[in-house]
Length: 194
Image (cartoon, rainbow, N blue to C red; front, side):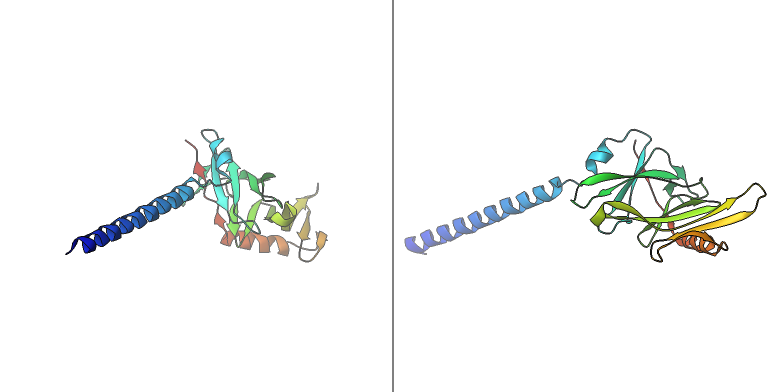
């Protein structure tokens, strides 16, 4: 190998090393940027106290919502469930806001999710809600309630967003239908802060 060929070889090797170094630095920078990207809910989660718990739930029109509770219980299937939670989600401008709270009637009715809806209820009530980020609002999809008078006579009330109906109904069929949907829903699994 002549002196000229040797110099070409050295230049080629140096160029290859330079390309590898630049590529490696670029890859490392990309990796660093990806690992440094914070979830918008991180600040809320970081502010939780020991004993509180949080969960992500697919109950929004665009992003997962964050549910935060002060108390959880083991649901019998290994799930740490809750009967109440504060709901956080994105608003119409893309900011995280507190939407409000939701509460079930006891541990027999833990908060549950099915097909993008959050279910909550009790022995005589069941609700089905979701977050609509485009209007920054909790939307009640359906709600059914049984109320008793002084003579223990039942009166049934129903609300349907789709049917644009709210009022008294003749029987418990809407309530039973929502209970059936709730029975197919999955209890929200919360993670405790330690």
